[in-house]
Image (cartoon, rainbow, N blue to C red; front, side):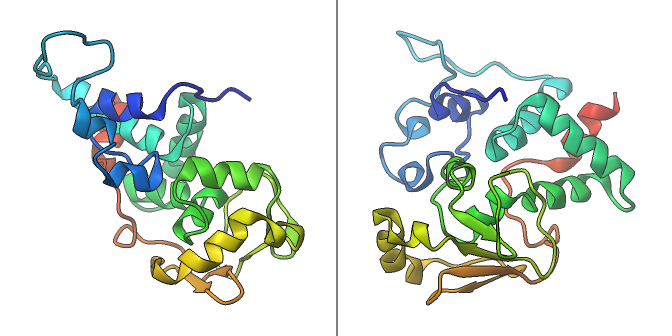
Length: 210
């Protein structure tokens, strides 16, 4: 399966906004957007970002969403097509579908500092979904689902450090976290109000509607 392999910080610089792709690093002075707020490829004298057309702004919002969740264009387009088929508002449906990805749920539960790290943990088979090993990051969770660490994974150094750090982490209302057992549960489907995003879903709908 194809995936993006270049520096994540270039994506933030490309859209001119922090997408929190590097976890806690993005909140420090080491953040690439803080240190060099120009698109990739610019050298020498600092240049002002060119003014974008309406179409360009819509594309930028779509790219922000795609980069934030770590999806390729074909994958993202499938999520949008599914959001169109569901009843309700397409933009909100898209947000909910993206949030329901297993790797995102692992990230939101605080088991990883970024979605890319969560995706790696899921791919390496560290989690059980309803008691069964699941290594598919795009798997959609539903209310009642339980997410837990595999017993063999609880012996890793990463898990031991996480046990010490998990106390200071909060989870959104659609999730429940047992900080003692380091297990999570899907309480209900996320709503648009539960989801903190750095992009405009309405602009994405307008982009694909043309």
